[in-house]
Length: 350
Length: 214
Image 1 (cartoon, rainbow over the protein chains, first blue to last red):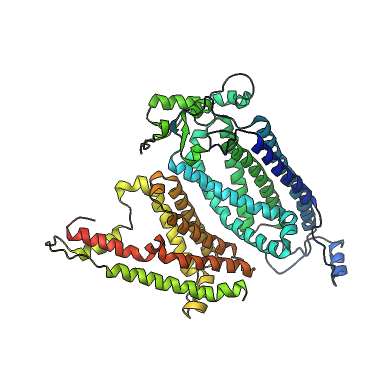
Image 2: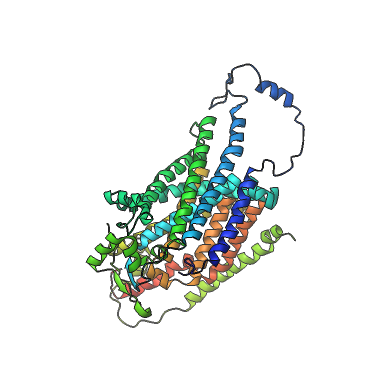
Protein backbone atom coordinates (compact mmCIF):
# COMPACT_ATOMS: atom_id res chain seq x y z
CA UNK A 1 0.00 0.00 0.00
CA UNK A 2 3.04 2.28 -0.27
CA UNK A 3 1.63 3.74 -3.48
CA UNK A 4 -1.24 5.22 -1.55
CA UNK A 5 0.98 6.41 1.26
CA UNK A 6 4.28 7.59 -0.32
CA UNK A 7 7.14 8.12 2.09
CA UNK A 8 8.66 11.08 0.21
CA UNK A 9 6.87 14.29 -0.60
CA UNK A 10 8.22 14.31 -4.19
CA UNK A 11 5.24 12.40 -5.48
CA UNK A 12 2.90 14.60 -3.49
CA UNK A 13 4.42 17.74 -4.96
CA UNK A 14 4.28 16.31 -8.48
CA UNK A 15 0.61 15.46 -7.92
CA UNK A 16 -0.01 18.96 -6.63
CA UNK A 17 1.61 20.47 -9.70
CA UNK A 18 -0.33 18.32 -12.19
CA UNK A 19 -3.68 18.70 -10.47
CA UNK A 20 -3.07 22.39 -9.82
CA UNK A 21 -2.57 23.00 -13.53
CA UNK A 22 -5.66 20.97 -14.29
CA UNK A 23 -7.89 22.87 -11.89
CA UNK A 24 -6.36 26.22 -12.74
CA UNK A 25 -7.52 25.84 -16.32
CA UNK A 26 -10.90 24.37 -15.41
CA UNK A 27 -12.89 27.30 -13.96
CA UNK A 28 -11.45 29.64 -16.55
CA UNK A 29 -12.68 27.51 -19.41
CA UNK A 30 -16.02 26.98 -17.67
CA UNK A 31 -16.59 30.71 -17.57
CA UNK A 32 -15.89 31.09 -21.26
CA UNK A 33 -19.12 32.30 -22.85
CA UNK A 34 -18.65 31.48 -26.52
CA UNK A 35 -16.32 28.54 -27.08
CA UNK A 36 -17.16 28.31 -30.78
CA UNK A 37 -17.83 31.01 -33.31
CA UNK A 38 -21.53 31.11 -34.12
CA UNK A 39 -22.66 31.09 -37.75
CA UNK A 40 -24.94 34.06 -38.30
CA UNK A 41 -28.11 32.92 -40.06
CA UNK A 42 -30.87 35.53 -39.85
CA UNK A 43 -34.20 34.07 -38.77
CA UNK A 44 -36.93 35.23 -41.22
CA UNK A 45 -39.55 35.06 -38.46
CA UNK A 46 -37.47 36.89 -35.86
CA UNK A 47 -39.53 40.08 -35.94
CA UNK A 48 -42.80 38.18 -35.60
CA UNK A 49 -41.59 36.10 -32.64
CA UNK A 50 -40.05 39.13 -30.97
CA UNK A 51 -43.44 40.86 -31.22
CA UNK A 52 -45.17 37.78 -29.75
CA UNK A 53 -42.68 37.64 -26.94
CA UNK A 54 -42.81 41.31 -26.04
CA UNK A 55 -46.57 41.70 -26.47
CA UNK A 56 -48.78 43.16 -23.76
CA UNK A 57 -51.03 40.14 -23.25
CA UNK A 58 -51.41 37.27 -20.77
CA UNK A 59 -48.63 34.68 -21.15
CA UNK A 60 -51.12 31.78 -21.15
CA UNK A 61 -53.60 31.72 -23.99
CA UNK A 62 -56.47 29.46 -25.04
CA UNK A 63 -55.94 26.26 -26.99
CA UNK A 64 -57.83 23.08 -27.80
CA UNK A 65 -54.68 21.03 -27.33
CA UNK A 66 -54.84 19.31 -23.95
CA UNK A 67 -51.68 19.05 -21.85
CA UNK A 68 -49.34 20.85 -19.50
CA UNK A 69 -48.61 24.45 -20.54
CA UNK A 70 -49.98 23.92 -24.04
CA UNK A 71 -51.50 27.42 -23.86
CA UNK A 72 -48.04 29.01 -23.58
CA UNK A 73 -46.74 30.17 -26.95
CA UNK A 74 -43.42 31.56 -25.73
CA UNK A 75 -42.16 31.12 -22.18
CA UNK A 76 -39.71 33.89 -21.36
CA UNK A 77 -38.55 32.11 -18.21
CA UNK A 78 -36.79 29.57 -20.44
CA UNK A 79 -34.25 32.16 -21.55
CA UNK A 80 -33.72 33.31 -17.95
CA UNK A 81 -33.17 29.71 -16.89
CA UNK A 82 -30.73 29.12 -19.74
CA UNK A 83 -28.72 32.17 -18.71
CA UNK A 84 -28.78 31.13 -15.05
CA UNK A 85 -27.59 27.63 -15.93
CA UNK A 86 -24.75 28.86 -18.12
CA UNK A 87 -23.59 31.84 -16.12
CA UNK A 88 -24.25 30.88 -12.51
CA UNK A 89 -24.82 27.15 -12.04
CA UNK A 90 -22.06 25.88 -14.32
CA UNK A 91 -19.32 28.37 -13.49
CA UNK A 92 -19.95 28.37 -9.74
CA UNK A 93 -20.14 24.57 -9.64
CA UNK A 94 -16.79 24.35 -11.43
CA UNK A 95 -15.22 26.82 -9.03
CA UNK A 96 -16.69 24.98 -6.02
CA UNK A 97 -15.44 21.54 -7.06
CA UNK A 98 -12.06 22.95 -8.12
CA UNK A 99 -11.64 24.82 -4.83
CA UNK A 100 -12.68 21.76 -2.80
CA UNK A 101 -10.19 19.56 -4.65
CA UNK A 102 -7.48 22.19 -4.15
CA UNK A 103 -8.21 22.27 -0.40
CA UNK A 104 -7.85 18.50 -0.19
CA UNK A 105 -4.60 18.70 -2.10
CA UNK A 106 -3.23 21.44 0.15
CA UNK A 107 -4.24 19.36 3.19
CA UNK A 108 -2.46 16.34 1.74
CA UNK A 109 0.73 18.27 1.00
CA UNK A 110 0.85 19.89 4.42
CA UNK A 111 -0.37 16.97 6.53
CA UNK A 112 0.72 14.04 4.36
CA UNK A 113 -0.50 10.50 4.71
CA UNK A 114 -1.70 9.58 8.21
CA UNK A 115 0.41 6.57 9.06
CA UNK A 116 -0.55 3.64 11.26
CA UNK A 117 0.84 4.43 14.74
CA UNK A 118 3.53 1.89 15.55
CA UNK A 119 3.48 0.54 12.00
CA UNK A 120 1.80 -2.63 10.87
CA UNK A 121 1.38 -5.35 13.44
CA UNK A 122 1.09 -8.17 10.94
CA UNK A 123 -2.19 -9.23 12.51
CA UNK A 124 -5.48 -8.56 10.79
CA UNK A 125 -9.03 -7.99 11.95
CA UNK A 126 -12.00 -8.56 9.73
CA UNK A 127 -13.87 -5.28 9.22
CA UNK A 128 -16.24 -5.68 6.27
CA UNK A 129 -17.78 -8.96 5.04
CA UNK A 130 -17.87 -9.75 1.31
CA UNK A 131 -21.40 -8.51 0.75
CA UNK A 132 -20.70 -5.12 2.35
CA UNK A 133 -17.65 -4.64 0.17
CA UNK A 134 -19.55 -5.76 -2.93
CA UNK A 135 -22.25 -3.24 -2.10
CA UNK A 136 -19.73 -0.47 -1.45
CA UNK A 137 -18.02 -0.95 -4.81
CA UNK A 138 -21.39 -1.35 -6.54
CA UNK A 139 -22.53 2.08 -5.39
CA UNK A 140 -19.03 3.50 -5.93
CA UNK A 141 -18.96 2.36 -9.58
CA UNK A 142 -22.45 3.70 -10.20
CA UNK A 143 -21.60 6.99 -8.52
CA UNK A 144 -18.37 7.45 -10.48
CA UNK A 145 -20.18 6.70 -13.74
CA UNK A 146 -23.00 9.10 -12.88
CA UNK A 147 -20.56 11.78 -11.72
CA UNK A 148 -18.41 11.50 -14.84
CA UNK A 149 -21.32 11.53 -17.29
CA UNK A 150 -23.08 14.25 -15.29
CA UNK A 151 -19.96 16.45 -15.28
CA UNK A 152 -19.61 16.01 -19.04
CA UNK A 153 -23.25 17.04 -19.46
CA UNK A 154 -22.77 20.03 -17.15
CA UNK A 155 -19.34 21.28 -18.18
CA UNK A 156 -18.90 19.49 -21.53
CA UNK A 157 -19.77 22.51 -23.67
CA UNK A 158 -16.88 24.40 -22.07
CA UNK A 159 -14.37 21.62 -21.50
CA UNK A 160 -15.00 18.78 -23.99
CA UNK A 161 -16.29 20.74 -26.97
CA UNK A 162 -13.19 22.95 -27.44
CA UNK A 163 -10.90 19.91 -27.20
CA UNK A 164 -12.75 17.33 -29.31
CA UNK A 165 -14.82 19.52 -31.61
CA UNK A 166 -18.59 19.69 -32.16
CA UNK A 167 -19.07 16.30 -33.87
CA UNK A 168 -17.24 14.27 -31.25
CA UNK A 169 -18.86 16.27 -28.49
CA UNK A 170 -22.30 15.48 -29.95
CA UNK A 171 -21.51 11.76 -29.81
CA UNK A 172 -20.01 11.94 -26.31
CA UNK A 173 -22.87 14.05 -24.93
CA UNK A 174 -25.53 11.76 -26.45
CA UNK A 175 -23.81 8.67 -25.01
CA UNK A 176 -23.42 10.34 -21.61
CA UNK A 177 -27.07 11.37 -21.50
CA UNK A 178 -28.31 7.87 -22.33
CA UNK A 179 -25.93 6.25 -19.85
CA UNK A 180 -26.71 8.79 -17.13
CA UNK A 181 -30.47 8.29 -17.53
CA UNK A 182 -30.15 4.52 -17.57
CA UNK A 183 -27.90 4.13 -14.54
CA UNK A 184 -29.74 6.70 -12.43
CA UNK A 185 -32.45 4.33 -11.18
CA UNK A 186 -29.77 1.73 -10.36
CA UNK A 187 -28.11 4.27 -8.06
CA UNK A 188 -31.37 4.53 -6.16
CA UNK A 189 -31.47 0.73 -5.75
CA UNK A 190 -27.86 0.77 -4.51
CA UNK A 191 -28.70 3.58 -2.10
CA UNK A 192 -31.60 1.57 -0.69
CA UNK A 193 -29.38 -1.48 -0.15
CA UNK A 194 -26.71 0.72 1.43
CA UNK A 195 -29.24 2.14 3.86
CA UNK A 196 -30.55 -1.30 4.83
CA UNK A 197 -27.08 -2.65 5.35
CA UNK A 198 -25.31 0.23 7.10
CA UNK A 199 -27.94 2.44 8.79
CA UNK A 200 -27.86 0.59 12.12
CA UNK A 201 -24.10 1.05 12.47
CA UNK A 202 -24.39 4.75 11.66
CA UNK A 203 -26.89 5.77 14.32
CA UNK A 204 -25.34 8.78 16.14
CA UNK A 205 -24.18 8.22 19.73
CA UNK A 206 -23.20 10.60 22.52
CA UNK A 207 -19.49 9.88 22.07
CA UNK A 208 -19.73 11.20 18.49
CA UNK A 209 -20.12 14.73 19.90
CA UNK A 210 -16.72 14.43 21.59
CA UNK A 211 -15.24 13.20 18.33
CA UNK A 212 -16.68 16.21 16.53
CA UNK A 213 -15.58 18.71 19.23
CA UNK A 214 -12.05 17.37 18.95
CA UNK A 215 -12.14 17.45 15.13
CA UNK A 216 -11.51 13.72 14.97
CA UNK A 217 -8.26 14.15 16.94
CA UNK A 218 -6.96 17.20 15.11
CA UNK A 219 -7.76 19.50 18.06
CA UNK A 220 -6.17 18.90 21.46
CA UNK A 221 -3.95 16.13 22.76
CA UNK A 222 -4.45 12.40 22.66
CA UNK A 223 -6.70 10.06 20.79
CA UNK A 224 -10.48 10.38 20.38
CA UNK A 225 -12.41 7.19 20.97
CA UNK A 226 -14.79 5.79 18.40
CA UNK A 227 -16.70 2.63 17.69
CA UNK A 228 -17.10 0.80 14.38
CA UNK A 229 -17.74 4.10 12.57
CA UNK A 230 -16.54 7.49 13.84
CA UNK A 231 -18.66 10.66 13.68
CA UNK A 232 -17.04 11.79 10.44
CA UNK A 233 -17.94 8.53 8.74
CA UNK A 234 -21.47 8.72 10.10
CA UNK A 235 -21.90 12.25 8.77
CA UNK A 236 -20.71 11.09 5.34
CA UNK A 237 -23.10 8.12 5.43
CA UNK A 238 -26.15 10.29 6.20
CA UNK A 239 -25.02 12.89 3.66
CA UNK A 240 -24.85 10.16 1.03
CA UNK A 241 -28.33 8.97 1.96
CA UNK A 242 -29.94 12.45 2.02
CA UNK A 243 -28.08 13.94 -0.96
CA UNK A 244 -28.28 10.64 -2.83
CA UNK A 245 -32.04 10.46 -2.34
CA UNK A 246 -32.42 14.08 -3.46
CA UNK A 247 -30.28 13.58 -6.54
CA UNK A 248 -32.05 10.31 -7.39
CA UNK A 249 -35.59 11.59 -6.96
CA UNK A 250 -34.85 14.80 -8.87
CA UNK A 251 -33.19 12.64 -11.51
CA UNK A 252 -36.30 10.48 -11.83
CA UNK A 253 -38.47 13.61 -12.25
CA UNK A 254 -36.15 14.71 -15.08
CA UNK A 255 -35.85 11.20 -16.49
CA UNK A 256 -39.60 10.64 -16.83
CA UNK A 257 -41.27 13.91 -17.88
CA UNK A 258 -44.58 12.13 -18.38
CA UNK A 259 -46.28 12.91 -15.10
CA UNK A 260 -47.50 16.41 -15.95
CA UNK A 261 -44.36 18.17 -14.75
CA UNK A 262 -44.47 21.75 -15.99
CA UNK A 263 -41.55 23.74 -17.31
CA UNK A 264 -41.04 25.48 -13.98
CA UNK A 265 -40.95 22.16 -12.10
CA UNK A 266 -38.40 20.77 -14.54
CA UNK A 267 -36.21 23.88 -14.29
CA UNK A 268 -36.30 23.88 -10.50
CA UNK A 269 -35.62 20.14 -10.43
CA UNK A 270 -32.64 20.54 -12.74
CA UNK A 271 -31.16 23.16 -10.42
CA UNK A 272 -31.71 20.98 -7.33
CA UNK A 273 -30.28 17.97 -9.21
CA UNK A 274 -27.19 19.93 -10.29
CA UNK A 275 -26.43 21.50 -6.90
CA UNK A 276 -26.96 18.23 -5.02
CA UNK A 277 -24.78 16.32 -7.46
CA UNK A 278 -22.00 18.87 -7.11
CA UNK A 279 -22.16 18.65 -3.29
CA UNK A 280 -22.11 14.86 -3.46
CA UNK A 281 -19.15 14.93 -5.86
CA UNK A 282 -17.19 17.28 -3.60
CA UNK A 283 -17.94 15.08 -0.57
CA UNK A 284 -16.88 11.99 -2.46
CA UNK A 285 -13.51 13.60 -3.24
CA UNK A 286 -12.90 13.90 0.51
CA UNK A 287 -14.13 10.33 1.05
CA UNK A 288 -11.86 8.97 -1.69
CA UNK A 289 -8.93 10.98 -0.32
CA UNK A 290 -9.22 9.73 3.25
CA UNK A 291 -9.88 6.19 2.06
CA UNK A 292 -6.77 6.05 -0.16
CA UNK A 293 -3.80 8.41 0.04
CA UNK A 294 -4.98 10.22 3.17
CA UNK A 295 -4.77 7.36 5.63
CA UNK A 296 -2.50 4.33 5.54
CA UNK A 297 -4.29 1.02 5.76
CA UNK A 298 -7.84 2.33 5.21
CA UNK A 299 -8.33 1.10 1.67
CA UNK A 300 -7.60 -2.50 2.69
CA UNK A 301 -10.83 -2.63 4.65
CA UNK A 302 -12.73 -2.32 1.37
CA UNK A 303 -10.40 -4.35 -0.84
CA UNK A 304 -9.56 -7.36 1.35
CA UNK A 305 -12.14 -6.84 4.09
CA UNK A 306 -9.40 -6.89 6.75
CA UNK A 307 -7.53 -4.12 8.56
CA UNK A 308 -4.32 -4.13 10.51
CA UNK A 309 -4.76 -4.51 14.25
CA UNK A 310 -2.79 -1.29 14.94
CA UNK A 311 -4.94 0.62 12.46
CA UNK A 312 -8.08 -0.58 14.21
CA UNK A 313 -6.70 0.38 17.61
CA UNK A 314 -5.71 3.85 16.40
CA UNK A 315 -8.89 4.77 14.54
CA UNK A 316 -11.66 2.67 16.12
CA UNK A 317 -10.43 1.74 19.57
CA UNK A 318 -13.82 0.79 21.07
CA UNK A 319 -14.56 -1.57 18.19
CA UNK A 320 -11.00 -2.91 18.44
CA UNK A 321 -11.43 -3.61 22.15
CA UNK A 322 -14.64 -5.46 21.49
CA UNK A 323 -13.04 -7.53 18.75
CA UNK A 324 -10.10 -8.38 21.00
CA UNK A 325 -12.51 -9.44 23.70
CA UNK A 326 -14.19 -11.81 21.29
CA UNK A 327 -10.84 -12.94 19.96
CA UNK A 328 -12.29 -14.74 17.00
CA UNK A 329 -11.25 -12.65 14.03
CA UNK A 330 -7.57 -12.08 14.59
CA UNK A 331 -5.42 -13.78 12.00
CA UNK A 332 -1.74 -14.33 12.35
CA UNK A 333 -0.01 -13.12 9.22
CA UNK A 334 3.45 -12.59 10.64
CA UNK A 335 6.47 -13.30 8.45
CA UNK A 336 4.40 -13.97 5.37
CA UNK A 337 2.56 -16.85 7.00
CA UNK A 338 -1.02 -16.40 5.96
CA UNK A 339 -3.68 -18.50 7.52
CA UNK A 340 -7.00 -19.01 5.83
CA UNK A 341 -9.56 -16.62 7.33
CA UNK A 342 -12.35 -18.37 9.22
CA UNK A 343 -15.44 -18.61 7.02
CA UNK A 344 -17.75 -17.68 9.88
CA UNK A 345 -15.75 -14.65 11.00
CA UNK A 346 -18.03 -11.70 11.27
CA UNK A 347 -17.32 -8.04 11.95
CA UNK A 348 -18.91 -6.44 14.93
CA UNK A 349 -22.11 -4.47 15.23
CA UNK A 350 -20.72 -1.80 17.57
CA UNK B 1 -13.16 0.76 -46.89
CA UNK B 2 -14.23 2.81 -43.89
CA UNK B 3 -14.26 1.47 -40.34
CA UNK B 4 -18.04 1.29 -40.31
CA UNK B 5 -18.10 -0.63 -43.61
CA UNK B 6 -15.50 -3.03 -42.24
CA UNK B 7 -17.40 -3.59 -38.99
CA UNK B 8 -20.73 -3.94 -40.80
CA UNK B 9 -19.29 -6.15 -43.54
CA UNK B 10 -16.24 -8.47 -43.46
CA UNK B 11 -15.69 -8.36 -39.73
CA UNK B 12 -19.32 -9.26 -39.06
CA UNK B 13 -19.17 -12.28 -41.40
CA UNK B 14 -15.86 -13.36 -39.93
CA UNK B 15 -16.97 -13.10 -36.29
CA UNK B 16 -20.34 -14.73 -36.98
CA UNK B 17 -18.53 -17.56 -38.82
CA UNK B 18 -16.06 -18.12 -35.99
CA UNK B 19 -18.94 -18.12 -33.51
CA UNK B 20 -21.09 -20.67 -35.37
CA UNK B 21 -18.22 -23.00 -36.36
CA UNK B 22 -16.55 -22.65 -32.94
CA UNK B 23 -19.71 -23.45 -30.99
CA UNK B 24 -20.55 -26.44 -33.22
CA UNK B 25 -16.97 -27.70 -33.04
CA UNK B 26 -16.96 -27.64 -29.27
CA UNK B 27 -20.42 -29.16 -28.89
CA UNK B 28 -19.74 -31.95 -31.37
CA UNK B 29 -16.32 -32.54 -29.81
CA UNK B 30 -17.84 -32.79 -26.36
CA UNK B 31 -20.64 -35.14 -27.43
CA UNK B 32 -18.27 -37.28 -29.52
CA UNK B 33 -16.20 -38.03 -26.42
CA UNK B 34 -19.02 -40.27 -25.25
CA UNK B 35 -19.00 -42.07 -21.92
CA UNK B 36 -17.52 -45.26 -20.64
CA UNK B 37 -19.85 -48.23 -20.62
CA UNK B 38 -21.12 -48.88 -17.13
CA UNK B 39 -21.55 -52.64 -16.58
CA UNK B 40 -23.06 -52.39 -13.15
CA UNK B 41 -26.77 -53.04 -12.74
CA UNK B 42 -28.62 -49.68 -12.65
CA UNK B 43 -30.50 -48.94 -9.44
CA UNK B 44 -32.65 -46.29 -11.08
CA UNK B 45 -33.20 -44.56 -14.40
CA UNK B 46 -30.25 -42.55 -15.76
CA UNK B 47 -32.55 -40.64 -18.13
CA UNK B 48 -34.87 -39.44 -15.38
CA UNK B 49 -31.80 -38.41 -13.34
CA UNK B 50 -30.53 -36.38 -16.30
CA UNK B 51 -33.87 -34.67 -16.85
CA UNK B 52 -34.50 -34.18 -13.14
CA UNK B 53 -31.19 -32.49 -12.42
CA UNK B 54 -31.70 -30.16 -15.37
CA UNK B 55 -34.81 -28.88 -13.61
CA UNK B 56 -33.75 -29.01 -9.97
CA UNK B 57 -30.51 -27.13 -10.61
CA UNK B 58 -32.58 -24.06 -11.51
CA UNK B 59 -33.50 -23.79 -7.85
CA UNK B 60 -30.93 -23.33 -5.08
CA UNK B 61 -30.73 -25.96 -2.39
CA UNK B 62 -32.17 -24.75 0.89
CA UNK B 63 -29.02 -25.77 2.80
CA UNK B 64 -26.90 -23.37 0.75
CA UNK B 65 -29.40 -20.54 0.34
CA UNK B 66 -28.04 -18.24 3.05
CA UNK B 67 -24.56 -18.40 1.55
CA UNK B 68 -25.43 -18.14 -2.14
CA UNK B 69 -28.45 -15.85 -2.26
CA UNK B 70 -26.48 -12.98 -3.81
CA UNK B 71 -25.20 -15.16 -6.66
CA UNK B 72 -28.64 -16.69 -7.23
CA UNK B 73 -30.59 -13.41 -7.22
CA UNK B 74 -27.97 -11.51 -9.23
CA UNK B 75 -27.57 -14.46 -11.59
CA UNK B 76 -31.28 -14.61 -12.35
CA UNK B 77 -31.54 -10.83 -12.73
CA UNK B 78 -28.66 -10.79 -15.18
CA UNK B 79 -29.67 -13.82 -17.26
CA UNK B 80 -33.35 -12.89 -17.51
CA UNK B 81 -32.46 -9.29 -18.36
CA UNK B 82 -29.90 -10.30 -20.96
CA UNK B 83 -32.26 -12.82 -22.56
CA UNK B 84 -34.99 -10.18 -22.87
CA UNK B 85 -32.57 -7.60 -24.30
CA UNK B 86 -30.97 -10.02 -26.73
CA UNK B 87 -34.17 -11.43 -28.17
CA UNK B 88 -36.88 -8.84 -27.54
CA UNK B 89 -35.23 -5.43 -27.89
CA UNK B 90 -36.60 -3.69 -30.99
CA UNK B 91 -33.17 -2.85 -32.52
CA UNK B 92 -32.02 -6.46 -32.11
CA UNK B 93 -35.15 -7.92 -33.70
CA UNK B 94 -34.67 -5.48 -36.55
CA UNK B 95 -31.11 -6.72 -36.91
CA UNK B 96 -32.10 -10.41 -36.91
CA UNK B 97 -34.78 -9.68 -39.52
CA UNK B 98 -32.50 -7.71 -41.81
CA UNK B 99 -29.16 -9.50 -41.41
CA UNK B 100 -29.72 -13.02 -40.10
CA UNK B 101 -33.15 -14.65 -40.25
CA UNK B 102 -35.24 -12.66 -42.68
CA UNK B 103 -38.16 -12.47 -40.27
CA UNK B 104 -38.92 -10.75 -37.00
CA UNK B 105 -41.29 -10.94 -34.04
CA UNK B 106 -42.99 -8.48 -31.68
CA UNK B 107 -40.59 -6.37 -29.65
CA UNK B 108 -40.76 -5.17 -26.06
CA UNK B 109 -42.12 -1.66 -25.52
CA UNK B 110 -39.54 1.01 -24.69
CA UNK B 111 -40.35 1.05 -20.95
CA UNK B 112 -39.96 -2.73 -20.66
CA UNK B 113 -36.67 -2.54 -22.53
CA UNK B 114 -35.42 -0.02 -19.95
CA UNK B 115 -36.58 -2.21 -17.03
CA UNK B 116 -34.81 -5.29 -18.42
CA UNK B 117 -31.68 -3.27 -19.14
CA UNK B 118 -31.69 -2.04 -15.54
CA UNK B 119 -32.03 -5.50 -14.04
CA UNK B 120 -29.43 -6.97 -16.41
CA UNK B 121 -26.89 -4.32 -15.40
CA UNK B 122 -27.78 -4.71 -11.73
CA UNK B 123 -27.20 -8.46 -11.90
CA UNK B 124 -24.02 -8.34 -13.99
CA UNK B 125 -22.34 -5.65 -11.87
CA UNK B 126 -23.11 -7.53 -8.67
CA UNK B 127 -21.81 -10.78 -10.16
CA UNK B 128 -18.54 -9.21 -11.34
CA UNK B 129 -18.03 -7.56 -7.95
CA UNK B 130 -18.88 -10.78 -6.12
CA UNK B 131 -16.25 -12.57 -8.21
CA UNK B 132 -13.70 -9.96 -7.16
CA UNK B 133 -14.71 -9.72 -3.49
CA UNK B 134 -15.49 -13.28 -2.43
CA UNK B 135 -12.17 -14.93 -1.53
CA UNK B 136 -13.05 -18.42 -2.74
CA UNK B 137 -14.72 -17.29 -5.97
CA UNK B 138 -11.79 -14.98 -6.64
CA UNK B 139 -9.37 -17.83 -6.16
CA UNK B 140 -11.12 -20.12 -8.63
CA UNK B 141 -11.73 -17.39 -11.22
CA UNK B 142 -9.48 -17.29 -14.24
CA UNK B 143 -8.55 -14.34 -16.43
CA UNK B 144 -11.02 -15.64 -18.98
CA UNK B 145 -13.89 -15.28 -16.52
CA UNK B 146 -13.09 -11.61 -16.09
CA UNK B 147 -12.57 -11.02 -19.81
CA UNK B 148 -15.94 -12.62 -20.64
CA UNK B 149 -17.82 -10.66 -17.97
CA UNK B 150 -16.21 -7.32 -18.76
CA UNK B 151 -16.60 -7.77 -22.52
CA UNK B 152 -20.27 -8.57 -22.00
CA UNK B 153 -20.64 -5.53 -19.75
CA UNK B 154 -19.05 -3.30 -22.40
CA UNK B 155 -21.32 -4.70 -25.12
CA UNK B 156 -24.38 -3.99 -22.96
CA UNK B 157 -23.10 -0.56 -21.95
CA UNK B 158 -22.33 0.60 -25.49
CA UNK B 159 -25.69 -0.74 -26.62
CA UNK B 160 -27.42 1.43 -24.05
CA UNK B 161 -25.25 4.45 -24.84
CA UNK B 162 -26.41 4.12 -28.44
CA UNK B 163 -30.08 4.01 -27.43
CA UNK B 164 -30.88 7.42 -28.90
CA UNK B 165 -29.88 6.01 -32.32
CA UNK B 166 -28.76 9.48 -33.32
CA UNK B 167 -25.08 8.72 -33.91
CA UNK B 168 -23.84 6.00 -36.24
CA UNK B 169 -20.47 5.86 -34.48
CA UNK B 170 -22.11 4.67 -31.24
CA UNK B 171 -23.92 1.88 -33.09
CA UNK B 172 -20.67 0.86 -34.78
CA UNK B 173 -18.86 0.78 -31.44
CA UNK B 174 -21.58 -1.44 -29.95
CA UNK B 175 -21.57 -3.72 -32.99
CA UNK B 176 -17.77 -3.98 -32.99
CA UNK B 177 -17.70 -5.03 -29.33
CA UNK B 178 -20.52 -7.53 -29.95
CA UNK B 179 -18.40 -9.02 -32.76
CA UNK B 180 -15.42 -9.29 -30.43
CA UNK B 181 -17.68 -11.14 -28.01
CA UNK B 182 -18.77 -13.52 -30.76
CA UNK B 183 -15.10 -14.22 -31.54
CA UNK B 184 -14.28 -14.84 -27.90
CA UNK B 185 -17.40 -16.84 -27.10
CA UNK B 186 -16.49 -20.37 -28.31
CA UNK B 187 -13.11 -20.29 -26.56
CA UNK B 188 -14.40 -19.19 -23.18
CA UNK B 189 -16.59 -20.14 -20.25
CA UNK B 190 -19.41 -18.29 -22.01
CA UNK B 191 -19.95 -21.63 -23.78
CA UNK B 192 -22.00 -22.61 -20.71
CA UNK B 193 -24.89 -20.96 -22.61
CA UNK B 194 -25.01 -24.12 -24.75
CA UNK B 195 -23.24 -26.71 -22.62
CA UNK B 196 -25.12 -26.38 -19.35
CA UNK B 197 -27.91 -28.88 -20.23
CA UNK B 198 -25.30 -31.46 -21.27
CA UNK B 199 -23.09 -31.06 -18.21
CA UNK B 200 -26.10 -31.15 -15.91
CA UNK B 201 -27.47 -34.14 -17.84
CA UNK B 202 -24.17 -36.03 -17.56
CA UNK B 203 -24.05 -35.54 -13.81
CA UNK B 204 -27.75 -36.32 -13.44
CA UNK B 205 -27.43 -39.57 -15.43
CA UNK B 206 -24.34 -40.56 -13.46
CA UNK B 207 -26.05 -40.10 -10.10
CA UNK B 208 -29.49 -41.19 -11.30
CA UNK B 209 -28.19 -44.58 -12.42
CA UNK B 210 -26.77 -45.12 -8.91
CA UNK B 211 -30.05 -44.15 -7.30
CA UNK B 212 -28.75 -40.93 -5.77
CA UNK B 213 -31.39 -38.31 -5.22
CA UNK B 214 -30.44 -35.13 -7.12
